[in-house]
Length: 173
Image 1 (cartoon, rainbow, N blue to C red):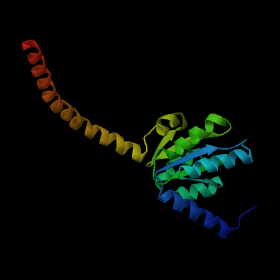
Image 2 (image 1 turned 180 degrees about the vertical axis):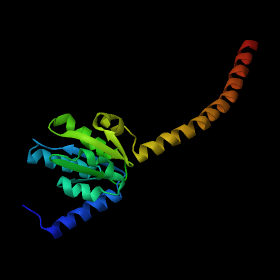
Image 3 (image 1 turned 90 degrees about the vertical axis):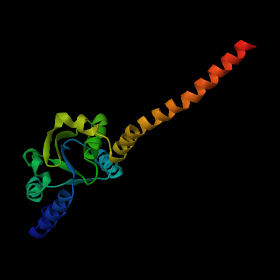
Image 4 (image 1 turned 60 degrees about the horizontal axis):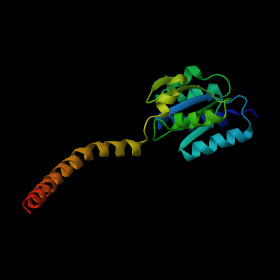
């Protein structure tokens, strides 16, 4: 169905609003996917807080202009789906990577992370980035490790003294 000018403006505004707040954006060609597969992709994206949009390329280019997501404009050709993540830089890559495992018809064309274009062959590297919660827990574990080691070391001193006293007492008997 052809869109009139007002409807096109609304679409451009909506996609621009998504792109303005997005940390990362992904572009994938969905040619050959069934409706059921697209529904599964949308469901997995929804679970990961990723917004998916199918938009005409000319409208997408207008919407992405002058945003951090503009870096993906060169790969906007053919039937593409745009994925936007507002919180996690690796969320779009994880959604696409997980979906591509079962559905080879989805072809990732590229990713934009914080205004930098990332080739599709780097999808795994971006998808393996830790989430915010994982990164915080890793940092906390690193900060806690020296304290735990100090506590164990300090606990060993009385334990060793007790063993020595016990061994001396057994020898004298």
